[in-house]
Length: 323
Ligand code: PLP
Image 1 (cartoon, rainbow, N blue to C red):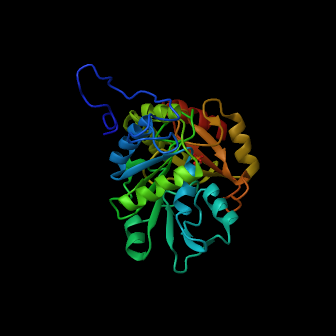
Image 2: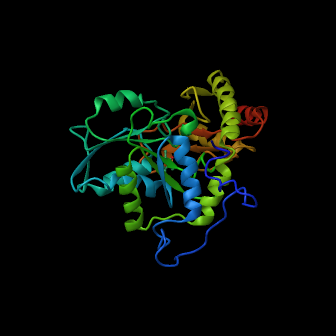
Image 3: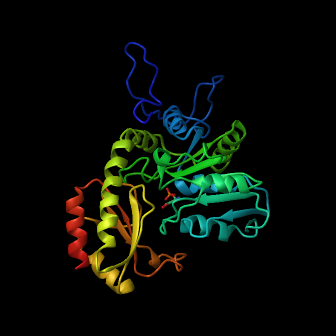
């Protein structure tokens, strides 16, 4: 699916991959009239992500635009129950919208699950949440990707991604996507995209689809390395605790000695890049506590996004940095 979904029809002479459609407007009386509503390059990417997630995908200009579009389908005063350690941008968005949106576990209108959570790597049982919820359930599937977890199959109504991360995979663009289980949800999301104008650029979408083609091999490699690194870090005397969900390419670990020791270790790294974000071909590391809104994260916690470097190069770098 990752390799073939969203390709043009196989007619003689047709291109094997979609082009980049750069047009803001269209000749009247056709299926598309204006570039804020639809675009052929979006459709190719959306077809591919939709097939992978098992629903209808709607692309947005960033992950946060996709998050906002789902949240803003709620009426004024709508109540959202959210994973307590969800991505800080999602929590800040909700906090800043109050009282237009209310964060509450009491009779919610929407349950927002992020699993594994970023950066604590807490895992939530999506099917159990769906069974226990009387309202729609949305899942931020950024860290697992549809290759490791398909929220819609588990009963969720929407799966959301920062496609900036693993789906595109090269740290060279910002993009979001929300995948709906029903026509009704897909229509609501498309309507939000058009009204808010949080539309992606066709070039970014084309790059993301190009990156998506290799997601299975990238994820296989980075997950295999993450398993090895999680185990070795767990046995390292400078590491207090490793947080690894047992799958995927992301892990966090707490450095003994707290913030100063963690910062000193990061400063000694030569291969792993100190930087925010995740899911690129290059390994990235960050001490998350320093972000506003991440006060609950242990000060010495380092989040590691495992990339495609050789696992022994990564381990040698981490072991030398930890001393
Ligand atoms: N969801 C998760 C889990 C994330 O990690 C991020 C970004 O780091 C977002 C959503 C927001 O995505 P974007 O940065 O593409 O707006």
